[in-house]
Image (cartoon, rainbow, N blue to C red; front, side, top):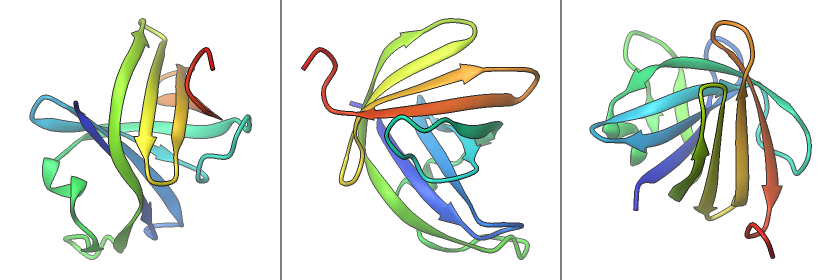
Length: 119
């Protein structure tokens, strides 16, 4: 099963990077806040990142701050369309459904609901 990581990143301002393993890279979104049940979170799609971030904590190259793992685990894609991605996260802190909905350009919104779907 593919892995995910949610990194707390302090540069340029505090934010959280949600990274989903897709093949040999990490599909990444910058979240304005850590996931809270039912609360919409502003998300910005970023370029793919290296798989090394699945297990990395520490300074980021070129003086781009420091990252710390906020959560990590495995995920399952439940549904993906052109404007939405629904995944089931199985992490240490997050155990439930995350829905990323595409807005304009690189702008997305994330909603998190704890628990197994249909439970």
